[in-house]
Image 1 (cartoon, rainbow, N blue to C red):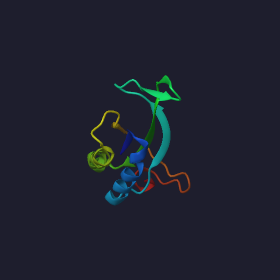
Image 2 (cartoon, rainbow, N blue to C red):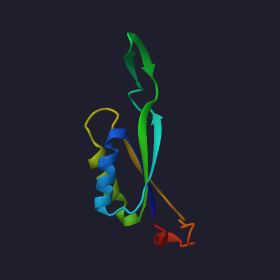
Image 3 (cartoon, rainbow, N blue to C red):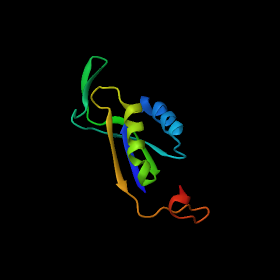
Length: 112
């Protein structure tokens, strides 16, 4: 199994959710987060005063999936989240050794 993590622009969340649901993903975890990449934040002007925004608001989406579906899930997320502009985000995957559904005690693929 794999844990796919995506950090994306907040306004792309609905498109990513819809694309994942259409692909067949049964569940996901979504968190509000903030950070920066190469752009190192940005400068904004508020009431005539310029200030530096160091941490840009983002959304973190996490999906557990079978090993054979991992690359397809990554492709679905990238396609749905992409705007072509700086700050679109990142997607990565890591192996998962054990998954347990707390309610039933099911383990492995049955727990997804």
